[in-house]
Amino acid sequence: MKHKAKRMDEIRLILQTYQRCGFYKPTARRLQVSKNTVKGYVRRARAIFGGVEQALLASDEELHDRLYSANDKEEFTLEAVFNAQLEH
Image (tube, rainbow, N blue to C red; front, side, top):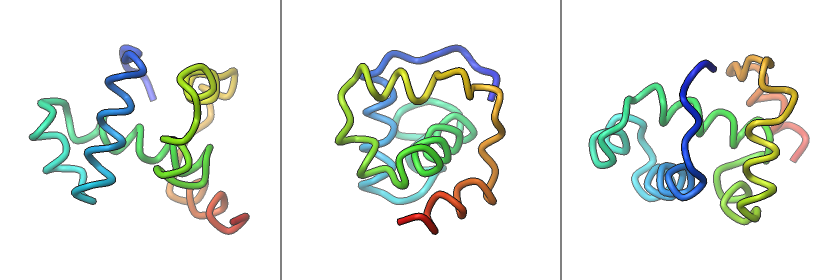
């Protein structure tokens, strides 16, 4: 996922808004960001934390470290998200 890194408050707002409305496009419209930006952060949250709710419980430092870790090159595909959810 190649993009300019967002601040943690922006990422939290994306995840919180997505959690409330449940869809990428309305979240993107409300926050005036691209749908792919929303989708990317939601997929990462699901793959790394097992869900958006769990990601929002993390501290800013943990959220940053895990979202932008050395695994940044890993592709967060639907399969990776699915496999992460199987663990829970």
